[in-house]
Structure formats: C-alpha cells, structure tokens
Length: 137
Image (cartoon, helix red, strand yellow):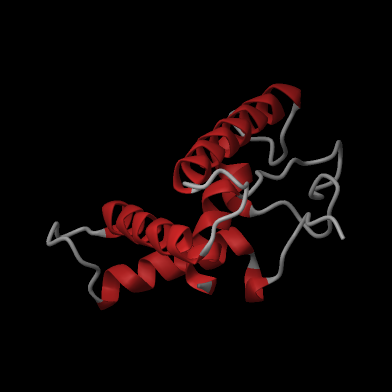
C-alpha cells in the first residue's frame, strides 16, 4: 500500500523552484534538488530564472493533470476516494508503469539491478533519507 502511494506521489510530486539568489524550495524547506536544477537550468547558472521556472511549472502542472485523470479513471464509484478494490487496480497500474520505465532487458519484470535503479530514482525524488520537502503542514 505504501509503495503504491509512494509511486503515485512520485508521479505527481511537485517540481520545486529556486528563489532569487537562494536555492530554496518554493513554500518549503531545504535546497532545490540537484536533478531539478540539472533538468531546467538551461543557461547553466546554477539556479532557475523566470523562464526556467515557467518550464518547470508547466511540466509539474502537466504531470498533476495527468495523475488526476489517472486517479479519476480508477475511482469507479466516483466518490473522490479510492476504495480497496480501486487501490488494488491502481497498484497494478503503478507497478506496470514502473516496469515500463525501468525494465532495461525487456523481460517484463524488474531484476535486482533494475529494482535498485527504480528505488534510487524514487529516493532521489523524495530527497535524502526520505525527507519530504515543500510539503505544507
């Protein structure tokens, strides 16, 4: 259950933004993740300018919309929540998506190396030691 929720969170996790002159997560705590800077810092200055922030926000918004559509498609009874059977169906979807992303040898399953890469990617998205950044209390 926690794995499914973690995968869902990863899929819709907000992309963090650098504040002018500071590498802080918008509305949150801690430094901006290196992978976010690496992906969106097109001018190579080590921080995100307004254009780069806009690109990051557009991607975040797109992923949020996609995940809402996915969640809504699994919410069969339309109550806005996933019951146990809906969660199980979503879990199968999330695992298949994970396999599609990390199955390097194409055998339809994740071996130990592929699982380790998937876990590393998840941890990188969550931050060091699994801490949550930018989460509103």
